[in-house]
Image (cartoon, rainbow, N blue to C red; front, side, top):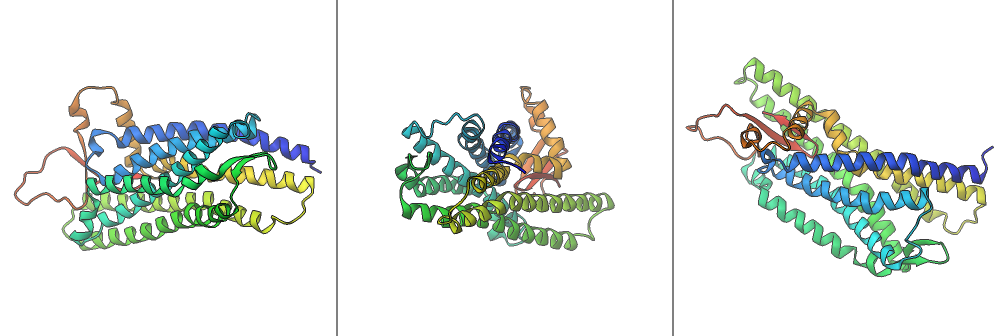
Length: 351
C-alpha cells in the first residue's frame, strides 16, 4: 500500500519530468506558431492575428505559470512564499496571460465561422483592423478584471502558499474565473462555432459542386476532412484539459470543512498535480494539434522554418493568405502563385 511519502514523491517526480517536458514542448510550439503566423504570407489573415496574440500569451503563461510550478512543486524552490512582490506579479501575469491566450483562440474560431458565412456583412467582421482591436480590447479587459489578484494575493503563513487573502475575491475567482472563464466558456464556444463552421463549409461545397472539376472536388473534400479532424481534436484537447480542472475546483470547495488525514491530503496533492499539468495542455498543444490535423499546415510550417533566414522576398510571396470575404474581380487576371486560406485557429488550407 502506498504511503503519504510515496505519493508526495510521485507528485515531485511528475512535476520534474512531465512538467519539464511539457514546458520545453510548449515553448517550442509557441515560438514556432509565432514564426509561422507572423510570416509575410499571413499578414492579411485576420485569423492569424488572433493566433499570434494567443501564442505570445501562451508563451508568457508557460514562463509565469508552468515554470514556477515546476520549480516550486518539483524542485522545492519557491519564491512565492518568501517574496511578496514576486507572489503578486507572478499570479497576476499568469492569470492575465492564460485568459488572454484562451480567448484569443476562441475569437479565432469565431472569426473562422464569420469568414465562411455567405452574408457579406458577417464576412466584413474578419478584417485585420477589427482583429487587432478585439485582441487589444481582450488584453485590456482581462488586465483590468484581474487587478484584485494584484491587490489581494500574498504569501499566507497558515497554508504556506501564495493565495488570495480576500474571501470574497476567492469565491469570485473559483466560480467565475475557474469554472466559467477557464473551464466552461472556451471549449463550449469553440465547439459551437466549430460545428457551425463545418455546416457553412458543407453548404458552400454542395452549392459549388457542379462547376467544380474533378481535381477541385478532390481537393475540397480533402480540406473538409482536415477541418473536421482539426475541430474534433481541438474540442477533444480542450475538454481533456479543462474538465478535470473544473471538477477539481468543485471538489475542493465541497470538502473545505472536511477533516482529512495525512494520506488523503497526499492523494489529493497527487491528483491536483495531474489536473494542473493537464490544464496546461491548453497552452502546450495548440501547435501540435495544428501539425497533426493538417497536412497543409505541416507543409507550410516546414517551408516557413526552412526559409526563415532567407532574404529573398520572392520566397515568402510564393504563398499568400487571403480572407474569405475578399474575392477576385471577374476581370482580374489570376496569378500563378499558390493561394492559401486560413480557416481557423490551428489550420491553414489551400483553396
